[in-house]
Amino acid sequence: MLDANWPDSWRGAFRIELRAEAIGLAWRGWPVLPGTSPAPITGEGDDLTWRRPVPVHDDWRERIGTHAHEVATWFSDRTHSLLVATGTVLDAIEVDDELGKRAARLLRALGHPAPIVAMPNGRWLFLTTVADHVPGQLAARATIQWHGAGSWIPLPPSPFQHGVVHWRVKPEVCGWQLPDAAEVHDVLVRALRGEATPSAQLVESSAA
Image (tube, rainbow, N blue to C red; front, side, top):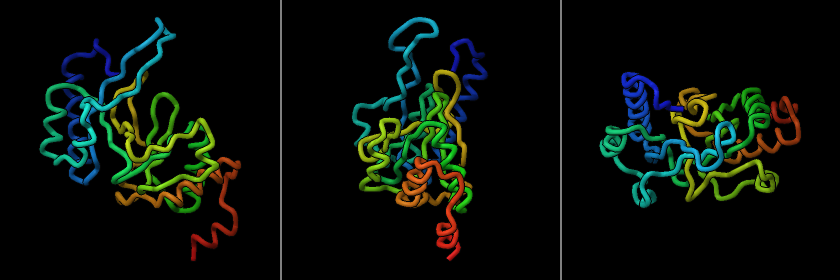
């Protein structure tokens, strides 16, 4: 996380990096929002429970789609987490790292990469186009969370409790084209069933 004991020069450089990322995403039309920095809410020492970042502004829904010039001002004077609202331009499926690794291998084998974010708490985010539902197999799992309308996700390099959010697969790998939500959902369902590589039928259909 962004340590209070960091030299001012490091903290300043980190703010500049966050601001540059926020501006770049806003120019691409992603609904960027400033978020809170992580903070302990209960416990002591190593038993602290940490709050995940939330939007700084109560009226964040009205700020979705703000121009990049205004976004730049949000990240100018202090360090915020970098959030993106879901449900308008993109959605995300949040899973544990074990399922994330299996799904990422399947996506690579199929030749359909998806932007993937990893958080220091061991959770992965698969970014997709906007969907109106997720398969029942995913919705029924308490360890899987769909971020759609009314939600948000942190993006790199947002600070977290023990590190920063980072890309496992950058959007540039997909040419900034978000993968179809249904395709990613299908791969996640297959990963839930323990498939490590795509079936012959999947290979044939992807090559068609």
